[in-house]
Image (cartoon, rainbow, N blue to C red; front, side, top):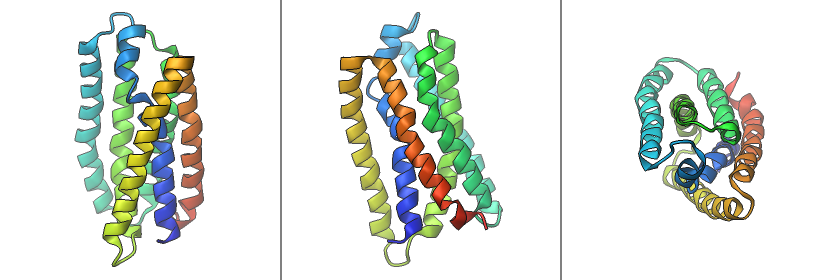
Length: 189
């Protein structure tokens, strides 16, 4: 496995660790801590995130396919993963429904610009003849990340509160951002 594939997987795992930390506690946080928060609000918030992400990601993917080279993908990936990594800390100051919706919308937009960029870079970086293994390597790494984040998040939120989870999330993301900075030489030529 080449260095680009390893670093792209490392940045994928750590940059998105924070978002995975939120997954198991998000619903409970909204219901318990947000004024007027309930399961309907949770459903709308997640729908906002998914709609923003999925609709714009198709536009971004077409854009990336039309442009030559990797520089545009790298720049969008850097922006998207940096914001996604740091965004969870903002939940410390969230107290109203519109703020939850806004953060979910921003998260969806960042997913929309970064995921197609990451996929394009990863696809062009995998070794010929090792495609199945290298895609599965990334998938398994992300599955293990999600499992460990779920356990950690539940225990930390239960023992120390939601804010502790919201502070841990960007710390993990910084590791991914460092990996992203390390791979720039491969994509910004």
